[in-house]
Length: 180
Image (tube, rainbow, N blue to C red; front, side, top):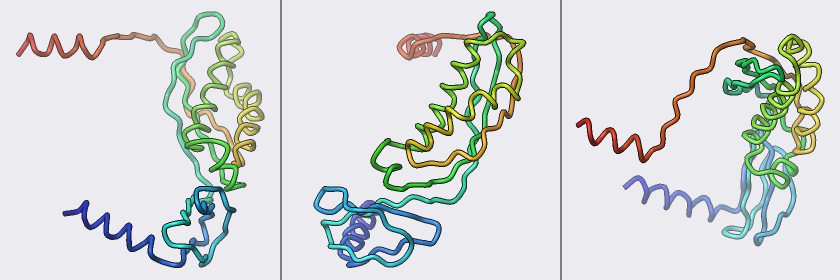
């Protein structure tokens, strides 16, 4: 029943001749399958079934990245986690230049920091150096994709031991069936 209601609501939204964009949002319109242009807040005319609006929240966001284990150049494993604070600067770039800009930005930030740690000795891996040497490359990628990176923070940086258990889904299923 919910699927039917969602379908009918989608058709109703497509029949409307306008789209409302909130003050904290920006959007792009695609008309007849081609990129048309970006829009700011307000009420905007649309051609039903032919215009599609893609909306993004442009308010400042702070996002925690997942913990990551990286090995330094001298073979010492460290756990690091980061936070990024960013905001959308150019909505057209966000939609046209990269898919899933937020996930891509976070992934690239961790890749940049991990590569940096991997090429430095453990003694060189201080929070100040990690932020200082990696802020500009992260900011540059964000800028290219229409985001302004305002801050990079290190939430956790710790030397630790790493234990990994590697299994495959096929093996795990086999052992689960055998023990039951």
